[in-house]
Length: 233
Image 1 (spheres, rainbow, N blue to C red):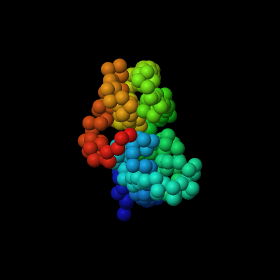
Image 2 (image 1 turned 180 degrees about the vertical axis):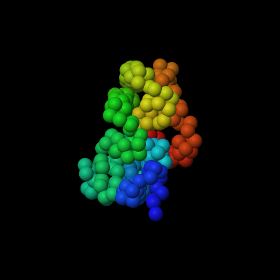
Image 3 (image 1 turned 135 degrees about the horizontal axis):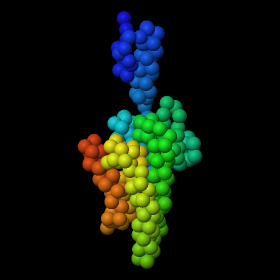
Image 4 (image 1 turned 30 degrees about the vertical axis):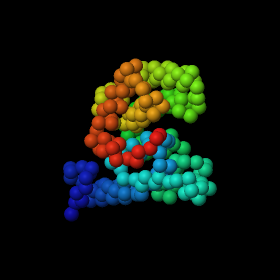
């Protein structure tokens, strides 16, 4: 009797071909059911992009939020003695950017070919300068002059990013009408800039602001944003 398996051709085929397709289907189901555990502190910080990637893909994962006491106990067991870490099938992955890229590739949110993956890389890597400026505003700037200078640096850093995104944007989002990793990173960046400056304005970045708005208004993302723990950063 032929196997009827989602994703397999319905055209006539020999039993061996159908069996191979069925086994691939079973293997993919087992992979999708593997437990994925993301460990970080109870804050958005360096783990939130990955949380949003899994939420966007509606991929189940363990959101393991720990306190400093728990961290002290597990620190030596992590690859570099730092968080976040992502555990997948017994493997522990460190470095927030590597974790986010793994999550995006695992869930099909990193483009459909190498050119689209390169666009993902260009956008997400370009966010680093903006993030650095925002971190400086939040944790280093003390005087009003330092804070004003940090704000100027944030806006200055956003100009080339807005140009880049506008150049490659193909639809509602960067890669078209479906969300991909750079859209999630852009949303998180806008939120981070708002943390750094509650009066942050997006007038100068209409393309980025539009992507962030569209992403956050998706029903499943809006539900997550409303229900996630309220934290300062």
